[in-house]
Length: 184
Image (tube, rainbow, N blue to C red; front, side, top):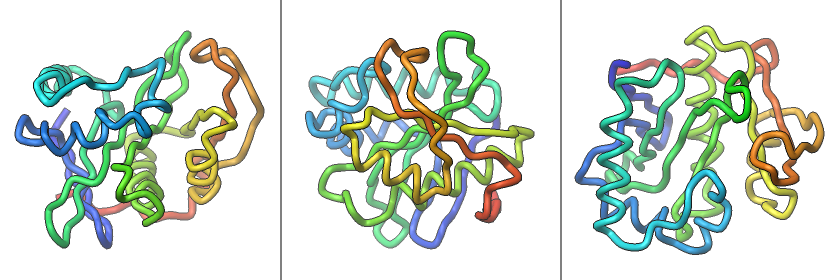
């Protein structure tokens, strides 16, 4: 897949680089963020482990079928890495596409997850995707609120995806009211 670069009012969504390791560790190594990543991903233990994770993500990226992938969210004003985004196939059947977002804890409450995810959803819909899902534990009130702000419809609860009781949200292309941001 060609490198992705999406711009929003405040964010640049781009491919991960090896140079992102220290900043990414502030996200994926933080216990308050990592608690919501399992079972897809465990908390990263140290910056060297984060480098290894990023190396694996970077190596895998060209082999992922669009629109799946993982990207960094960078604040345009100061080039500060504030989060990560991903589109992946949900288990067990790998038919449903899930959007995921992670934001550095000191940046929570600023709307970066919503802004970045909205841009990525718009891009995904330009890649011939008809619907996108988000799943969250009901106790993850931030993720549930973000899904709702994105205009995602609650469609129920399931243990289908990860063996956890999860809230399931969906947005269809016909219901998406956001723009498809220009790629650069």
